[in-house]
Image (cartoon, rainbow, N blue to C red; front, side):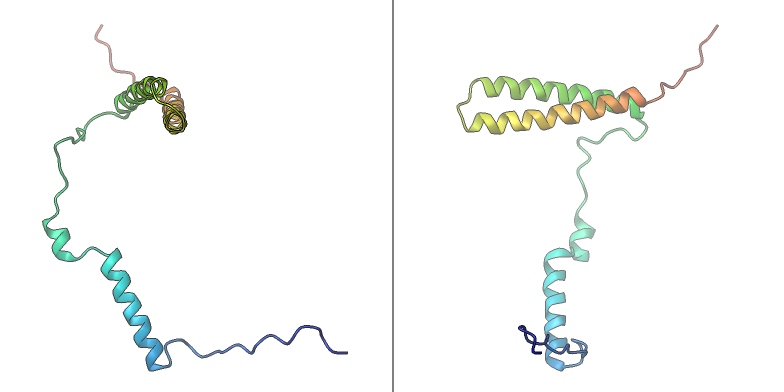
Length: 124
């Protein structure tokens, strides 16, 4: 009995690097990807990140979380105020941004709830 579909094509077990053309094509593709995705050494050597708004390295996690929570709460209020003065469909976009802010604020609040408050020695 004959099968209604043809047999699958035989697989070519040859490596793509065996032919000179495929090897050249692969090398060209790698050069193109490296050009766009890998920074060159000159760029890295001269690029120094800005320290204008650097967070103090000795800042404790709880204070950073409290600040993040307060910033998110303010962003939430600002987006709510903006949404009140904007017509559709931009209002939907602003309200979606507000929802993302609220979810981030909830997550930060949960982390704050889970953080153990460090007990500082009291002077008696």
